[in-house]
Length: 143
Image (cartoon, rainbow, N blue to C red; front, side, top):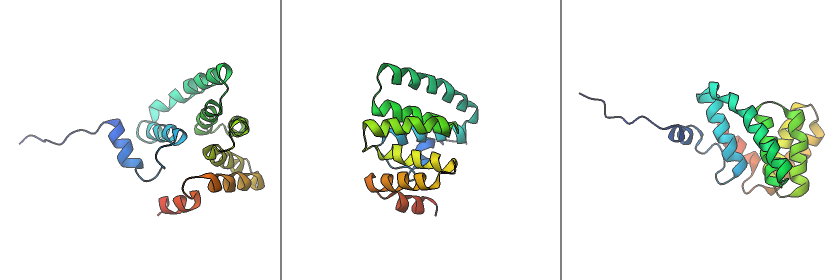
């Protein structure tokens, strides 16, 4: 008897693995979701992050919008280049103070750099601006 189970596509695997873990409808989280998929399920593909960083650096030079700065910060964060990510997140926030995801990842990077008071301020700002409580979301995700 032939196995009729359909092989899941990478997008279906990502949705199954990360459903409910990352808030929907946010570009930064969509990029994070893709990066997590690469890092967890296909680690060999993580080498694409440096190329993506170069692309975002070019975009920032050509069009220095808050969104482009945020994407640059996030791809640096995903490579554990927090020192380089911090200025990108700060520039994104300078251009658009409502980008709560920049506050979130800025806080994470600052925490990794042992700048705890600044990290807490950024995380509190992110929690205040986020459409759902990050603290509540993190608690649910850790169960």
